[in-house]
Image 1 (spheres, helix red, strand yellow):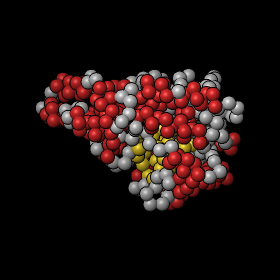
Image 2 (image 1 turned 45 degrees about the vertical axis):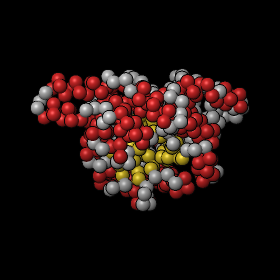
Image 3 (image 1 turned 60 degrees about the vertical axis):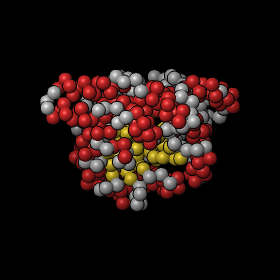
Length: 385
Ligand code: LRH
Ligand code: MN
């Protein structure tokens, strides 16, 4: 691809931001509150709209239920539209209620499973109200000790729940199933890896796809292989981009391993995933850094990785691969990765009438100071309902 082609392809790349990234977050050790943090979903969406205002690449916001519970979801959707963004994926939450100690849809007790499925069905009702296409399902379900529960029976319960919810989806709606290899469960997790998620979504049907959260793999996992495989099967529904040095650290996408993000976007591009209805989302927690700039930087990191991936000389790569030229093929990829695409992205932003440096532009806007002064009192948003 030449530069103008890369610019137009990156221009089409849309990255969804998570409402919870604007609230307080932390670890079991401490949640550090920050000034100006939103107190409700309306303020979260206002902050998300700032990310789109300065990057031009983040037109949708994911909600998490009940963290983003409101009286009227159609009113919240109108509020978002008024700010130039739209409500995107609806995330269910069956990991914070006392009843879910031994699981939710996989719980041994049918009454608890019923409660969990009813919540998932309520999330589909919310999708109808917000016009959202995707229901994102991540289950904390698992066990902590061998023998605690029957691993196979838990899969039966999971399949039953997913099938009921699948049946509730309307045309144009999808369920995207997210896997994670551990935490909060420490012996078995009921959807621990891409294979388990893939197998369940295959049985369910076309409307069921897999979510690849880049922080949810065992260290050393070749995530881009999983991406290539799921794309080939037409089962890659979405990404939860973030980065990590150790576990599910939920750090800024591309911050810990920009080369991995590049390799992932290379497989996305090679597999036609930029135009295949894949939802590119961020799923991050800005525990100590300012949240809106953290999201802006993350969107820019995904844009940079994508621009580099689009600069891969596919012809030269194919030729080197076909002739077994190992070093030649690797060099083609490294040339693209080592290309500084920041001037190209600055040019794209100028073409879009945006400041070429979104971080500097946001800092100069005074928005952070404005919300710190205005948002006094009330309960700051966080990972609590
Ligand atoms: C689980 C997860 C999931 C969300 C939560 C905020 O670790 O990645 O995607 O529900 O984070
Ligand atoms: Mn996630």
